[in-house]
Length: 123
Image: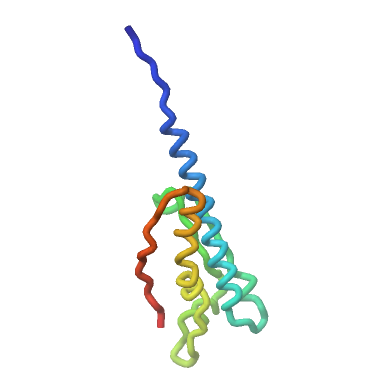
């Protein structure tokens, strides 16, 4: 006697991956918007260059989000130089939006996640 069964595990994993992707994309979008508000503006080049990249496969990870800029002076604005004070815009944006990920996960996944998270203040 043969017994056949059908499992929904692959479809559950696909669904969870899609939901996680949505959470990650929305959180990164919030961080990008915040970074654009906080970025110093002279010519507007830095603000316009801040972008978000959410990838399904990167560096051996399934999902990865990157918010940043490719302009050379972005790193000098963020960290400063020995002659110029830092005008932080990326790190404070990430810290400001730490709760976004948890709140979206609660909403989209429908789970109760702990909100006890340690955040580090960048000086």
